[in-house]
Amino acid sequence: MNAVEIIKKKRDGLQLSAGEIQFIVQGYTSGDIPDYQASAFLMAAFLKGLNTEETAHLTSAMLNSGSKLDLSRIDGVKVDKHSTGGVGDKTSLILAPIAAAAGVKVPMISGRGLGHTGGTLDKLESIPGFRTDIPVERAIEILQKTGAVLIGQTKEIAPADKLFYALRDVTATVESIPLITASIMSKKLAEDISGLVMDVKTGSGAFMKNFHDASRLAESLAFTANKLGVDVHCFITNMDRPLGDYVGNWLEVVESIKILRGELKNDLSELSLSLAASMIELAGIASSGAESIKIAERTIADGSAFEKFIEIAALQGAETEFLRQPERYPKAAASVICDSPEEGFISNMDTYGIGMAALHAGAGRFKKEDSIDPSAGIIFYKKTGQFVRKGEQICEVFSGSMQLAEKAAVMIMESISFSASDPEPGDIILSRKFYPAVK
Image 1 (spheres, helix red, strand yellow):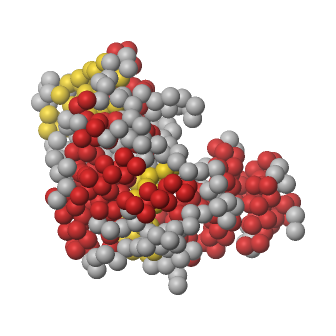
Image 2 (cartoon, one colour):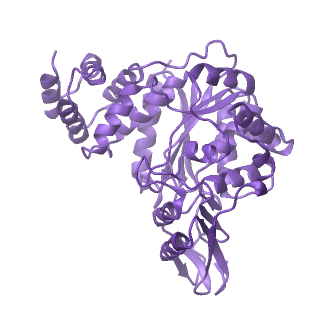
Image 3 (cartoon, helix red, strand yellow):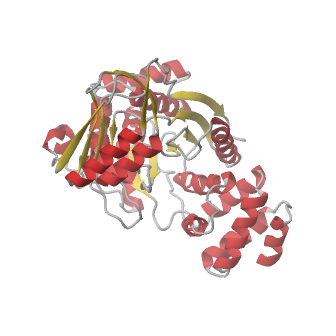
């Protein structure tokens, strides 16, 4: 067996065996296969595709390229959630404590933001002292004690994914559903979970711009997880507008706090409760969706979800007084209010443009090494489908400098359209489906 023959086989559109895929993954991870051959393999897979069997084999090979969490000593069903990313998507901060308060074990490995999408780790690290880079053994201890832990990918978990993703990024092979699937699932399945809730975004602020492509990705992710023994609840959700009313790292923590305290209800709270309820159902704590929603809502009503968030944060090093009193957090140096230039309904929001505006304000990074201003971001007072009068406030932009805030404000207003009639913004949840694991 050699790399050239395997590359040629996939180039010619033939199906690769588990052993052939394992040979490529293991060889590239160990350094025996050079970048140029791994690049050729990725391009052949990109152009000719990988079927469901090959995708599962690639996922398994990448998963087994490193160590996995061993959660055997922790009682209870382990369930996680993964989102394909978007603007204002902070559901992890809300649903993890809800699910944990309901009795689900939630080992959550998350990522950072890059470009117009935010990252869960960046949001958590805007909380003073919060550590996401804790050792695996300590993470397991926190999970055992609180029911949830929120950490970043360690160097031991799926190292092949890091290597292949870096190569895909510079070889124009990112936009491949099988390769995306293997990248996501190799990390998620390393968590030793038996259930996974998937939130696949579609719309102007999502990676998958249309429902058809989002559905294809959802099915690929679900089928791959199923083949490797994991039950999946898969949602396709709307990213044609920012999720929630706050965009930016600390601002999104504040919005999460408001929802966990029961002080705010909006599209973000609706989606977070639905995703958390699916986690509760997958864990076997509820026998139906209606019952699981009631359980999720009860954790907010009785305060246990918010207290669980405080407990998790404290064990991960956070200064929790900022969570109990968010108003104590350092304010942004500059802010600009965006007023409506006309009267009418907000008919459309280019969510990608809004995400880029938040990035320019300092809430994101253009390159991985860029630093983030945790207080930068946007608060929306009006969104798609809402009526505004001329001069009424649509949003407020926060930044470290007035120049950056003003630039972001211009970008936001260029991303918003108006109409005389109500545009019907549509549901936040477009579809949901259960995919049982292959037993």
